[in-house]
Length: 426
Image: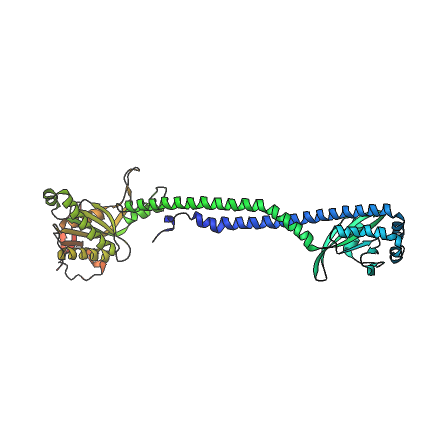
């Protein structure tokens, strides 16, 4: 199973799931803010342009027909003032406001909100109760609102102006499409540059992250390949300890374990009278068959010492698993003999597990009296024979059929004798 630490850093996936949404959100916020700003600015400019147009028209009308304006502003009945043929010239000038600005309708209100002029004669002299109109007359600031007229969206532009000491308000109805087209064109011109920058930035970052991901994947694959090659030379527990202790402070532990120790019988003569390649091929095949068997039974190869093999079994049923592995190996070698046979010693006891050696070159291995005793029991075993301490056999729970009688053996390094039993296949 691949560990999380073995996986390459997913920079490309993180770019897609984190950076891309941020870029999109930034673009949307930029476009949203730009739309609001452009819309507000264009409305402001449009109001100012309409106001200048209105002021110019009023100035021309006052100069051309001052008497008409005085009557209109005096509070006289607008229908009578506007019905006078002399007012036709001033009315034509007023209607120029609507013609120049594509207006659908024009109204002029006095300070009391009374319509003193309208392109629709039905509105003459009508007082309009309109909150926005009152606000414009009081503040003398232009304003704009949206409404529907005959199922058509229109903008109502309220333009305040001063004439003869009085405040008037012009209400100009214009199709919304006119201003909307201006806003849309301005927004497109505004959005092109930042959107292009964000798009180019996103493409550039995508390319960088893609190349970075390729480089990261390549380096991780190289590291994994190197690690797999190195793990061929160390035990599983050594590799695990190194991964769990990146700072080099590998813990030292003491625990109970079952030690499996095997050794080739009369290997010296084999090495002496056979070519080096044949000797190495023999050892490789023999070790492969042993390692496969102990691995199937949950053993961890601690080290290979020339023609000897040391394996640790830990955890539940460790004694039984070690003995079953030893029996399987000896039975396999009996069925398919090799140039030399092996002897196996199995012992259960406490041992110390940790890094041994200088900081520059350490071996993560097991040491202690139990290891030595397993090697001594292996030395007692004949060709194709297993020697196990009697207590480990009892603890294994395996049937003792096929095991020899209990023997008391004196081994090097111990004053007390060791009780052992022997087993051979078939």
